[in-house]
Length: 499
Image (cartoon, rainbow, N blue to C red; front, side, top):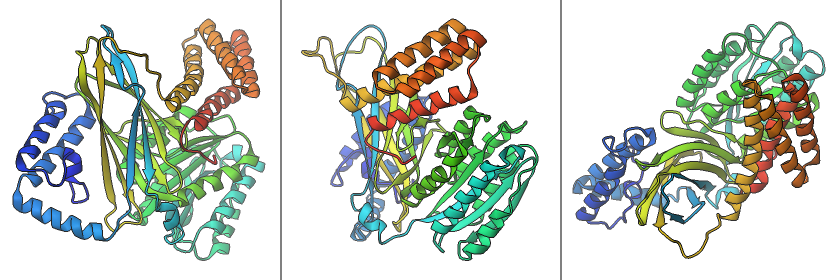
């Protein structure tokens, strides 16, 4: 644990706490997170290390005094902060013999001063574009990519860093990592791109990581945008390993698929492992808006390298996690942390987590999970910040009244069901269960129609008929349903998006 992590916050005690209260807090948390009692949850192990370090610091009077003195000096600097708010789908749970599911909505909000400070402090980018220029990109696709890249150069500041890699079945660095000062020269190099060859993403992505590393820094948004219109050949595992290494170094990757002939599961995995976004660009004409909106959002970053660490109690199972805003997508846990991207200065990050509670819980209050949000605030001298929320619920045999989940969770779950329906329909197709796939797609169409999403409902019905006759989904239809049902989640979250 570094000086940047507040030991009082970690132990959940006031700064005036005496030694006995410190010991009691440590014992209380150890009963939940110690590896001997909670060996299967990586998040519990991570947080217990912090708890132990916090305890050892505060129980030593001399070390505690030095820490308190340093913190008083830092507080005088008025550092920025972010806050974590967690809302449970239920505050009171009925005790029943069977396990039951609850949801936690975690929202991370930037410092209220962030919008005002954005006018005074420019967010600096260390941006790498990794662009597919294989044969399939010939014509309008490649020309629109060039236009988008030119506009990105125009909108970057001389303090920003840009590198551009083009790839097909090999990769070339056409712009080595450099400050964006001679914009006409940079745009001229981009204009020289021509379409040729096949598609091997690893070559381009590995050179992209190399260029990003040259200026890698804690006060920068270190980000790679990968754009492709095709399937890569034989190097998916190497790309995933590279993405895992990149996130450890503080590099995020967003993956954008153009058209319909690309592997969405593969690009989703690259993005979710690093805290980036994955997007479906359905036409060449949309490339310019997508890329420029994405870079503009990066320029609004208040905090970078945001992560969640989830430590459920030993008898509770952490099942899955989905990011609702600002860019909806499923998330993955990497060595105990969930990368969630950057926190923008004008909107929160919103994440929905699903847990399974055990059956036959005794009445009374009980803890569910500790959630820890960690990130680097770009404007602060001491950037790393973490904040913790420890969630508890009441268990009752016979609650006096039925409790409806908060409306924001209800709406999110309703729309998340649409996304899951199309995912399960796709799973059924892959398993060869045509009847089940058709049923789920028809159910999806009915729900979309009830919401007023007529075009998307029509797409679902069209795919249901296609599956019944051909036993398969079209690439266009499947990607449209997948990414459009994700996008519906934006209206049920506290954030919004331009993408």
